[in-house]
Length: 590
Image (cartoon, rainbow, N blue to C red):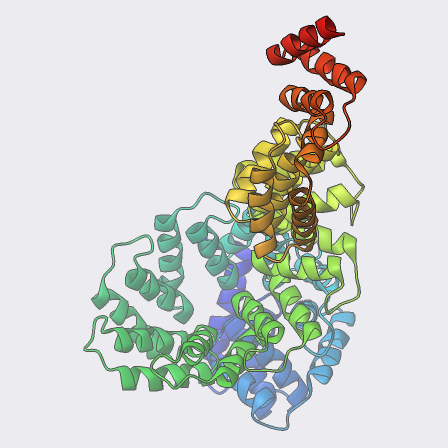
């Protein structure tokens, strides 16, 4: 049940509604403002409306925009469209003016001003993205009694935004704020239950939580219940129930419900399929602020489904959704900038959107922003910050980041060098089949880097990677057989592995093959005697015996009994029976 403070805000709002109906605008405004300051989105919207019309208070466009924006950041349906119209469809105040105005209110002690300033830092509205400052403002807002600020503070803890990440602690904080009746926190906590973020995954409990918000006649809650019925989240799929809940939310102008209804029409869910009508509704929902509709349109234009393929339009919708703070859209926008999809390549802009995605909790965003910071791609190098972001992605099980973190420990990049820890992390990845780490483990054993030299273990890990096509592992397999590292020397096997690596562009393997080919050609030009001498000098007993025969019989040379005796003796000592007999016969003759 909501706490007394939250109940007071709701009571104040309802009393203000009654006063407004009676035409007592000034009294209504005071109650709306009281409820808005503690985090009541509908009250905030009404304060914005009264400032905009000069009803019960002196007209003030800046205050009007501020409070309307406040309500919009909480997903309040009427406010979202109003903010979109004033910010994007007119010559209204610039983002910079909005930020400065919100900061001024925050400095004057307004809890709502602190919250909005935090959102400006969080969404880069009129200022650079600054997760630490955002978290600081949300903490101040929460301490001043603003529940939306408390909700955002909890989300920062869950995401590791501007503070250490602790998903369990963040989820507990979020549940506490939700228990005070805060709509935003209630929906976010339900999302945590649905996806198992900071709490055990429990879709049934998530459905119950969404339903509780819907029962309060909150349009977003009604939309979420419809989505649960449509997608089978915590409840059996039911097309008719999904359609019905979307319809209920639609009646109060919920743009998310329009998006859900568009899905119904395009998929024939609970209603006859009507792709054309569904597409028009989807566009309408996107134009009026539905982030999910924007993302779906971006995907349709990107793939050319139901609409003509248009990378530029796809990018436009992805970026609009990204600028409203959706982490998936931020990630996708970053990828568009990185790959030049629908927009000119721009590594700096790619990094900016990857970082936004990371700040808003996206694991892949953490990886990409972190790796850019470590390498200095599109941003000034900051290995410590990059290591932190990649560590967060690694904690989520993202293997590419786990590999980067292991390498950071190996090289001392962004963290103190620790070869033992690097080896343990790489070994864990290698055992999971991560080829690059199999190469690292193999090299560690081969070169005694952080572990004792062990050619057998090195070959085992190189072979795993080589069989999966890693050219460096293939090179090392060639090197092992070429030099007889822990195995009998075998040039045929060495050539086979070198050729595989060379075919993938490994330059050193190509050079080694060229050198081996030259040596082989030189051997082919040797006389038989030279060939036998070369093999004899390498310790071949049979060749030693044959060289002795050459000297004794004077084959192609003058006889040399002393040299014959020397080679027979070597061959006999090596166990060659023919050499023993030849040596005995030679001594008898002499």
